[in-house]
Length: 425
Ligand code: ADP
Ligand code: ASP
Ligand code: MG
Image 1 (cartoon, rainbow, N blue to C red):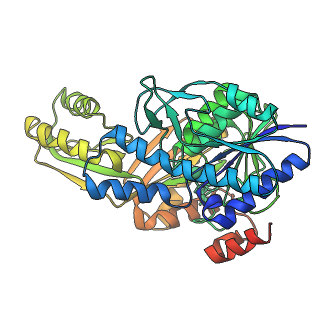
Image 2 (image 1 turned 180 degrees about the horizontal axis):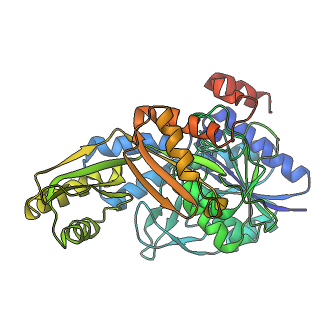
Image 3 (image 1 turned 180 degrees about the vertical axis):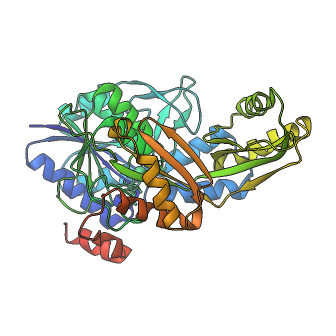
């Protein structure tokens, strides 16, 4: 008998029919003799719709109210799933983040889990219920609702798995595992059977949306085994775990990220202390700077560029309106049409030549590199957004990651996926 946490994302609970399918899957686990706790996301695009509603009444909604609003999405799906399970003759009980004992800090919209109290979930399990937990939410020390950042239900699932000592944390989504690149962008991407925490963490950080970075961080810290798998089939997915025997591939995968912008300060006087002033100002205004590029100076002037999340752009503009005149720079320009493409692999640190092959491949494909950054296990380039797909595909090919078969799911429409669900595969 195993103790399993099973998390279902927005696509998997997007309609009453799909919720019924999830209920069937959970019941099948119980029939096979396993104990199971479900964690759910909000139905379909509910979270985006709630964000839209908030924006329609306030340009800058208060963070506390926003978290309260967004947490309602998961509360709809958790109750419907519990009802669906009950309709099939099994006992189920839904829990909000607070009821499930998810205690967080007070950083609204990106709260960190600081404690998990497992009593109520354990009690429900012991009394024969299938507990259904609302993902993405917790409670701060003031008793206010918090949310864990977009994609945060993955983190709830891992935290609950750790809290109850589950054998595995299964994350069900519309892909059947972690691929060498986003299969929707790179049809020749290959599914990985297993991936180390370090490689997965770097892929998630570089934009691979299949697992939230926080979830992987939490799992690595506490040794929770994650199984990323399909909500539409029983096929084995990808295990994320620590395995010293695991082969260290030079390149494990390629991620892309279109959530950043590039900002360039033109004609900045090339003097000591300029960069310190600029980046201290941005830090004080809570702008998360990612890449930094300083051009060679000419006639005592230089250009400085940096990238940061789109979500921080308004704050960055505020800082720059103040600092650009102070630095006597000519102006700043914002480029929102960029994408970051990252090669990730723990084996990279002992393999020279990765950058050379990456740059020559991009060059041969007429893809201009706008910025570069590296770590021992990652190489990232910024390119024009319109060239991101091509960049992922040509790098995937050049580094020998291409599969012989094409990821067929990319061809499926939403209706076809729903039909597959209905057939229960
Ligand atoms: P959920 O809503 O269930 O949490 P997500 O949309 O967050 O699901 O995650 C699944 C999506 O992640 C897939 O549809 C896929 O397009 C995307 N994705 C990005 N990178 C990868 C990757 N390397 N492997 C698999 N899927 C990926
Ligand atoms: N519903 C939240 C989101 O859309 C959390 C999640 O799905 O994991 O980001
Ligand atoms: Mg997700």
